[in-house]
Image (cartoon, rainbow, N blue to C red; front, top):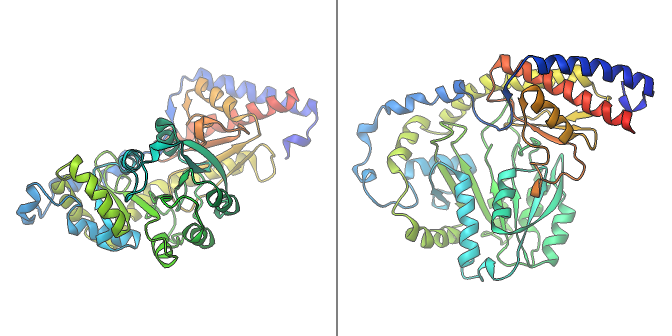
Length: 420
């Protein structure tokens, strides 16, 4: 049924039932968390054989010493195959790709890029497809970079708007992109979107695409979404230096102890290493080699990710089924994504209700990502988008979470309709 078409009397009856159910849930004293996209313990157990490191005795002795600032070739090859780039375009980092993104922006602010003026000599802006990844927005806010919202649809960011903005404003220096199984919508950018990003005219010569390919191998079905190769397209268009691509093994091996990488043009690699050599002697090559021993090659990576999928896909299915059963296709108060990969489901509720849903959930013992988090400055002008992360919870806790969440959505939305 469409709640928006019901009479006041019908809405009041529904509200009274939801209020009774909600009060009962509150009385249970639950404590469940579906706020962040973390792997569960069963997923992390898959990588525990790494710690025995069978074959470590064959590690080249030089890996124990200083040097090899860009990382060991064996693991660089796996990342290169994963991202569709050349080994010489890869630099390995520490455990966090977010750290590499932060450092990349900080270097540009302080030193510029390949001889350009430092970004901090004048106010700068970044384009932010929304809803998007809150950590990206936090980096910009931390550095005082102005953020401009760009709406997302089922193909990716609105490219008409992107092209117009970058062609006319030299202060726009970058765009954040999670191109495959986007956080939090699950959208994979269409080929046409990737091509337009690669070929568009930008007024800023040092404009960069921050291509956070965090979910490149994180499929939830046997058929992976196709993502066009942004670096190949940029090189073909004469913009080889336009892209900084990021990835890590954080959700492949151990979330707190993975290996990250940046993949970019050879010119950008040289520029980054010229600064990185002042920052560190090398990253942890022993741990890189241990990763190589475990991952082996892309065929084995796919087998590892199949095991991951078998653990988390049922959780996504359970949540989607509960939404289907609770709201159907025509409730008018809720819609949601059914992603083919990644770690999140986006739940859109009736305008003006997302914060209220979070408040009600908190009182009932369910922790959600804060309403507004998928938008710069935490401002969702429609107050409707919620990011749901089902991976970390146990099956029993997920059952509780879905009961609380669906009850709170109905409660908040019917409450608002009654107030109108």
